[in-house]
Length: 191
Image 1: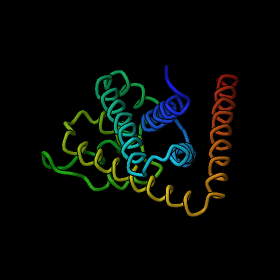
Image 2: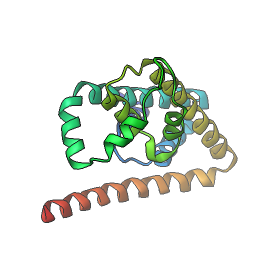
Image 3: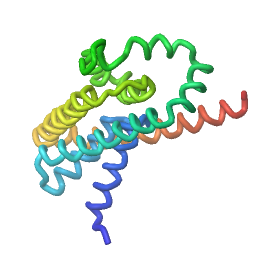
């Protein structure tokens, strides 16, 4: 039987896992929920950062493995629908030489547009990306720790901001879900 804080922590972890896999969930919302819980429970920012890092790495690893495993099935459908993906995949490779790292992947990973898609493209490329994945997974841990540290310090220094951040997070989460559902309904009606 899980306690209330354990259930909340598990839901937040699943949220980060799904977000890393590509579900459009707001990272500020997820961090806001986690930081408020960590603050209430007295957990240090490092625990929060490692927690987020673990679930983010797990989500990215699962999405990479899924895209790599189901590459032929996904590849044919993606190319048929989005022919320009061929150019993107040919440019975003783990590296020109075997074992080389492409710094563009790290940049795409840190900006919102390529957060999950980097791992999808690596899986679709069919190349062995183990060295690249190790670097990107370390970047995930660094990303999670930086956000956790900054937001923990913000919540301690400005608790009012924490309340607004949580409210803003809930609003983003709800509006995202409603927008996604509305888009899905419109697509069904027009398709």
